[in-house]
Image (cartoon, rainbow, N blue to C red; front, side, top):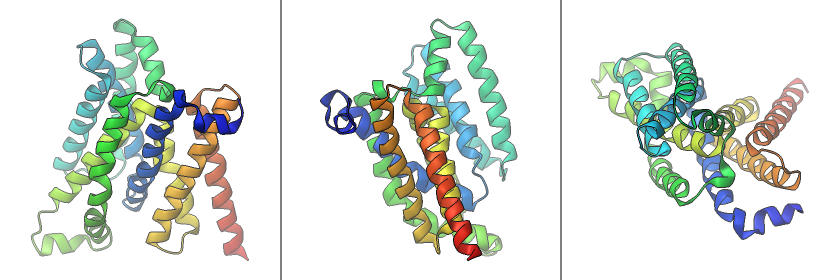
Length: 267
């Protein structure tokens, strides 16, 4: 298969568009997570959503629904308990990891489903995943400008909300629920590490080289989309699993951008 066939073959058109939606939106959330110094949220919620998906399958509930519910409950608990920082997400990683492996060992087809959640199953994405990501993007993209103003203000002027008695829990909870939904849907399609890499690596590189906030958002999304398309073509041409190829491509793109920014700063 040549690279052009990967983008034009009708058999892979739906998976291509499904992953493209995740690659476009998840880095925007990752940029805000990095600003809040809560980037580990992505990995913690991905583990929780994977465990929820397996639990849902064991109870006869669709995997996406189980993952969304588990990640949403974890995000709501984190916000309403007023816990800040990465500690709570480290606990989520440990809880999700242990629950995923125990469920995999004690449910029918659990091991194969656990591997699918970790490695990703983009090639098998259907209208359920595409519809979920379309709905997620339709809610997230219009909401981000409203959320960004409040979350940036909370990051740099934390006393403002308390001094003016603002209901800050509303936007913190809204953002945490968006991250939970994004990671649940991303994990179901791109795999646990693929979704985490989209949230973590592009913003990491963008914060190094971007001159401002808008540039960081644009660079994060651009890096993620470029790496996703390159990984999709490479995985198809060389018949490789998509999740590891995506992570490797994102690592190369982000590391190259980060190093280029370092050279520019040095000069």
